[in-house]
Length: 116
Length: 114
Image (cartoon, rainbow over the protein chains, first blue to last red):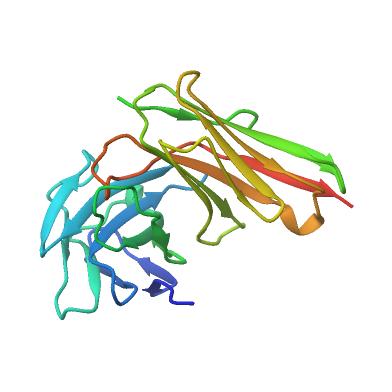
């Protein structure tokens, strides 16, 4: 069964450093999302992306964050200057393009980001 | 602002019993609800998706219902097994745009006692 993959599984970085988290969507999926889960808290929406542009972003997704699909397969989340509070599990999710009915979101295994 | 709540935060049940997990939401205009399973330190596994036009969905020992008027969804697990131990999350989509973001509850941590 096709699945969403994410790399790395765990990233440790120092405060102020840039990190790039990578996701490989399921091959025929066209809509992409990033969510994050701070330890012990809810899964929170960050951003959705379609047709090479951001569709929606949350208030968490400030100027320190960016997303892109650099090569038609990977979907990346970049944090320019990491802060301690960015430590969390980051999940990528993908769906096929919807015709109007809700489509199940498929989640990757996550990248655990630890900022020291 | 849409809110999704899951109570209780933790539940322990002897093996073999049937159980119900609860999910409530503040916006009755919910369009869709998805139930997930999360094992410790792992990703999210989708269990069931209920669209607003449906009242329930079944997969094996799992049955999920959606009652928009009362703002509630339930996940029923029949004949529980130790392997069912995990955190169960519900998440709602509150727009009729098919690729809407999900709003998650805090989850219920389920422990099945052998």
